[in-house]
Length: 338
Image (cartoon, rainbow, N blue to C red; front, side, top):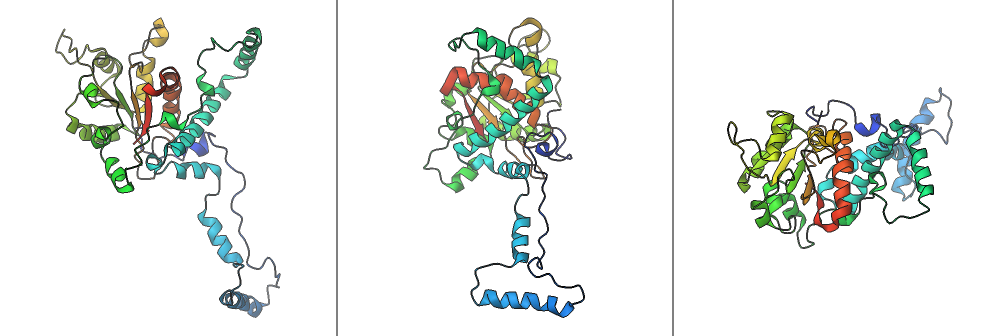
């Protein structure tokens, strides 16, 4: 849970149906489709490549069937492979491309979850809509219909060149210190809100979380460890509440400006205590100003947005925690792909 296993399984988008796959695979293209030759005419077959090569040298614009075949084999054969390929290097893409990519994965993930819930809820929603007489003023936020827009994502200044952008993405502390990522670095250093870190970082695995903790050490700020290893859920709840770390029977009173964790554990903390008493969970996003999706790729080229173990929980975290804040607080909270 939460992506501690580094992508030993098949691609999430293939198995779970988040992206529709095509039943057609790349069919082999025979070089003799246009010239059917008997199997015994060996000499005629050998002369076909040489004649085609002479035509190409003479300036013939039509490529051979064999070259067309090799080009088709290099291209993705299904929409799912295209999405997985699009997720590689997405952190350095434009905010428009990021909104389209995250929005596509989110939409299909929500649809897949809703499909398992059955059609009963849909009928009830239709009845409620009809009874409201078309009034939309007091409608609650509907996360399943949310559309990610470019303005929801951090966009670096146009003055930053590709080399500088690549350098910023090599270290998380350097990335957070660059101009424009956070509204105020001073507020980050003097953060005063329990349960709601100013920055929440979602990572591929516990191992990757530890790597980012080392990078963040240069900021010399307290960072909440919100992943499965080393700490239990109860300890992390105390940490977020400001009850832990102060010794026996003592409150630390510490507010964490940054929290780093895996989607599974962050989702657990978001829900902790919320369903039982109707109060907000141990982890809250009501003051959070930046959601960082760490797009570090594992040895097989998967990241937190494409790995089978992390995508469902990542998108559920976005649905239950992030989407509502993006709707309510507009430009006061951003999503950043690192």
